[in-house]
Amino acid sequence: MIDSKTIQNIAQLSRLRLNTEKSEELAQQLAKILEHFQKISALPTEGVEPLVTPTEIENFWRDDVAEKNFTTEELMQNSPSRQGSLFKVPPVV
Image (cartoon, rainbow, N blue to C red; front, top):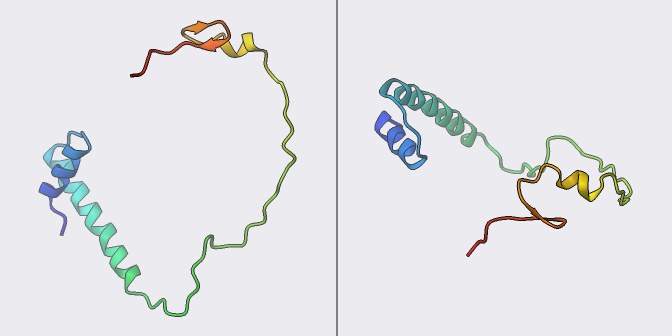
């Protein structure tokens, strides 16, 4: 069973702040979700082939054509900092 203490622990690990009412509400919602998973796991699945998708998907491929849509200046105009035609970023050590 998921209680509000467990929810508070998860919230702390997630760096979230929850009040008591919200943690109790989330505990009830999570308990309902877990009940649904228990129902699903109880279904007989012997002999059922696994599916990647519920329906058959047909791939629609297109030719990969390189196009030059923008100039370098157009691409760089919103850059906060640049050096020539390159984005300038803080050094990463």
